[in-house]
Image 1 (cartoon, rainbow, N blue to C red):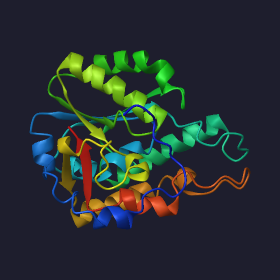
Image 2: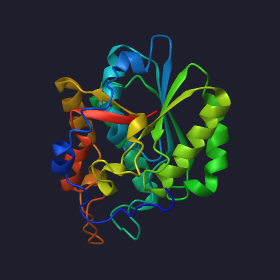
Image 3: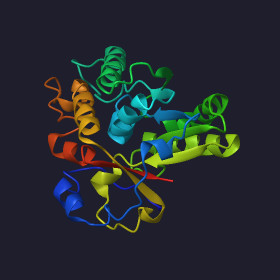
Length: 251
């Protein structure tokens, strides 16, 4: 991919994705096979909520196996509401950390280790080497790392993906890329998406319900901002794309 896909409008509908049989043709991978016994899962989220959007159902399943879980939030998401009088950056950072903690509890993953790197939201590309170095200090060869895909269409998501990719390459850890905004700008069978390296993790009804409950904890992202008139960061029309009965990862 040579250009960053735009994220605007309503994007590709969930109905369009559901009608495409290509998703069901992807190889299925169980949580047990994705993170074998004795391995730790490290989830790298550019912002608090990406861990739920990208792999909340998987996280619910891993918490019950159980597997050790480390969640790394690269930023606190403080820049999601520019010029807002309702969400000043410092308070928004605290809000999003609280939302993430409640979401983990909804997933049954409240025992996960959580690290907040507090890098500047919206500027992860400028701090990519720092993020890579800090991840390299944490990641070991028996870790399974989940991070937003390197071509996800959001600059922070892509910077975090590149940093995780480089750290995993150095440390010998396995990496899975999580499509988050890819579901918005891509289309079924899109040649820009590496479907040939994709796997799907089917979600049971309990995992899917828990993911929905966890996602609803991010009220700062789900509600419009009356102080600026800005629409919700995560619009209602987009939510079904993240609440399907499987999660997809690029290996």
